[in-house]
Length: 457
Image 1 (cartoon, rainbow, N blue to C red):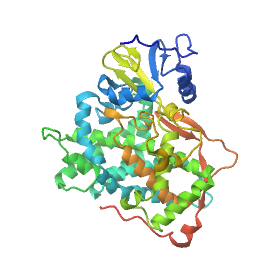
Image 2: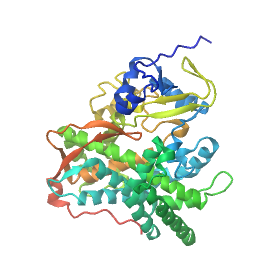
Image 3: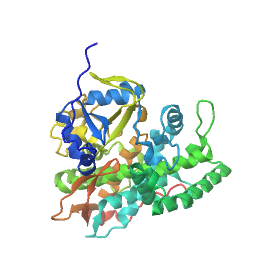
Image 4: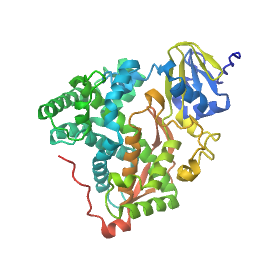
């Protein structure tokens, strides 16, 4: 076996702080700058060395091929530890058991059943706007995403109170997760709105679970599936486990879809031809209807916009921890090493994506994309054992949002404003994105009264 390759050190380390200032102040540009230094680069968080994988081959090896040698990064579970040992915070055998049990909630057939709720949430948002309103897009999409996930959790009237409560406190609890990742020991003791919202939300979910169990019906929603799923030994989830997973889903199902939808509307506002093609497809495929599951596959250009938004604006950071000494590519890493990768830096690297700064949905047309993308160069939801279980849910939700809102509104950029990509927890979001709501004539002429079918309550 050849001698291990030397790992270059990133320049600019501060005494005692390492590269913490760069990661705190300009993480996107800093991590992207490491692409030019090597396939694996060493940075320092304080005095602690952390490795950054910049090459798709190394990232795929870490996440997929040699994934058995890695576990989640040390900081990952901190963000959600206040909820409990939920799927997105566990590792090893507990994670495998929980993932097998929760996977049926995200089968394609189940996701199709959630589209009614997604559509209702998008219609509520569209109905709340008036002509020439200046929309603060990210908060609007955050509220919409909160409604979409809670409507998917509960279809029955038994879940109405829990849905309303989670929609009311979702953003506040999401803030708890974001701050707990930074200072879990301190933030959890502060009397913040999110911390105050946790106990009553938990109690209401517990009552809802008890009501569902007593009724014994399958309503086709996520809670019904969680009540019926079992592990390999035929053992189901406890009420406490279900409560915690519902809390986890209500939080983790918000930030990603909200960010992707916000960026999609921003890019459409910058490109009238792209917007025209989207509207033409929506009008042709839906013909004034709200989207159903049979329509998603036909909204091909809409899906390309979603995928390009995931390409250009994915999460900015992911981490893994070596269980044992490993050889990653030509590099040797000791047991207990922390390895960081940035999907944002990876997806915006010209070596893997020509003209990465250009938002180009056509790069995902089948004739352009088939067989051309290097393995490991696509990681908006991570990959392997710890890949995000809600990847399909997110892609369908954002497509529904674009179709519903795009059938009724154009969102125009506010003149004179510059929108920057900023980091928020692990997401890349548009800073201060405000757009002007302009009614579409095609909707005003014939379809203004059309509504989504009622949920099965």
